[in-house]
Image 1 (cartoon, rainbow, N blue to C red):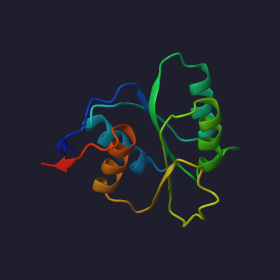
Image 2: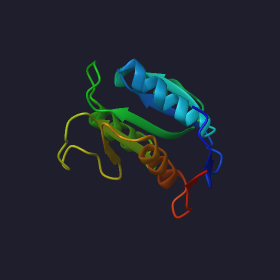
Image 3: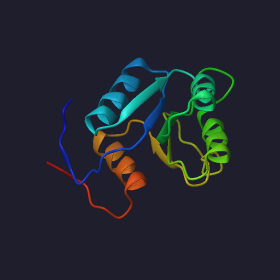
Length: 136
């Protein structure tokens, strides 16, 4: 993909991506990798949560689709993440319109289909609030 973005600071820590669609998971991890992030991707929130609970490294961001398979849906997963790791930025995506009551407080919601620009700007605003981002 190799998109160039001005004004994005290096991303410290891993970005957890939870998406069951192979193509979208690949696109998200490629975008984040192009932004300088180290991504760890999962198909289910169950697996992502188990990884996060056992990992010793820090995470910079969590991006989760709501409608993933498994016992834990995306919004519930992000609520658990917020309780265990307060202040960890998060993005919830869904192909369905979700009511505000479903989206955890402080989580950015992106309804699919989102554009690359929208995703990158959401990530940048969460990780470096107040700093402008331009596509070059």
